[in-house]
Amino acid sequence: MVCEYGMSDALGPLAYGSEEGSVFLGKDYNSRQQDYSEQTAREIDQEVRRIIQVQYDAVRQLLADKKDRVEAIAKALMELETLDATELKAIFDGEEIPRKERYAVASTYAEKDKKEKDKRRVASIFGGTPKPVVG
Image (cartoon, rainbow, N blue to C red; front, side, top):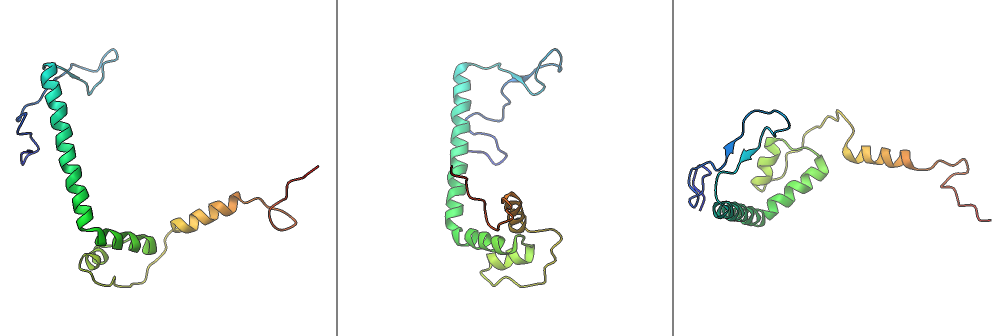
């Protein structure tokens, strides 16, 4: 079980490992010195795995429960590329997305991708892609 403040009921509100001194002569700034037993290290690993698995399962369930909304958002993003708060609220409420005039400040991803592919296409004075020489 995970406590409300992110602490583990199994391990308590303790910090394991003490911070090492200054960054000098190759010491890692963020490194911590292990000042606990191998058994405690195993318990920490098990508790971290358990917490991650519980949260992973919760997110999978949430996405499954809200699959229709996730798909509606994905579809709207493919069409419009951006959504504002009003549009997201409409999707969440199961309403039609309010249509409004959009201003293209930059090319869309699809337009950029097409231009990039066109640039890579081999040019030919005879029209079309060149044929390999057989000989």
